[in-house]
Image: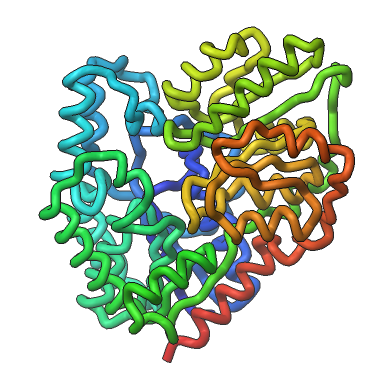
Length: 420
């Protein structure tokens, strides 16, 4: 059995969506001759918690927890947030004006914390990681980012020990879309690019979760071509076992967006369409799980949709899946060309019609339309084309069994095996 150190900032009971890939991959890896341990933080101060995820962790899994300097605690004090109230990503990153304090806090976050606001974990993680590696034989180091600070930790440990490391980039690093909306200095950008390039050079293998991201990175860094791979985000087939559609009121169309939705993911004409349909007598229920940005909430209110809208917040994972199963329309708004939202695979597996908004994302478009699961329309679209074709969507769920994370774990083990 080979030994693997998995470094991930987010870990149960944190409810961050990015924990689901490592959580399930780690669970399945021992079936493929890899024995994982996890290096993570003792607790994080940003998102809500999901205690139910703790049941997914093997009690024999070795977990190494460290302290962390958490700048979001300072942000909380600076913004006079309640001590025990979770901070919400879509609000902290909102471009909607919240006054000078909010803007100062955003500037500090984008320009002084490089590569991201989790860089305060670096010294604690490197020290604790080295202590662990001195006492335990480890064959590979794997890092999950964002936060991309995690990759700096893996790179440092690899350099100190000679152990090959594999970064998994869930999102792009230095040119992710939301940087375009913030005033990031040239110096901060250049330092971040230096970190990114060094990490990719140090890596034995690199894993991306979309083909378009890998292709983009190869254009920027041709040296990664022969050592980079794509493993889709996927879903957990076991979580759908015994789960059926449960609906009380079948007279209304339930439209659900699951996961965080930010200011820059606003299909503003779609909200107008919903307003018109309701005015003509159509019964519609709009639901959101996860966090909803101030701008999106403003659009909902502006179109008089508040009385048909439910903000459910962050739900336990199984409850969130049940909401997906119960919906009539699943709304998804990829943030950019290279982005495949993690929830898309659970959407596809549910078999319910999907309405996507994005101006240029051929990978998401192909996944949805090849399986006859729905449509992807431009952000300025009204959404009428989707409703006009609603009865024609007959999703081919069988196309997505290959994205079960147990299968992805086997593919990942082969990547780890291939490192010389």
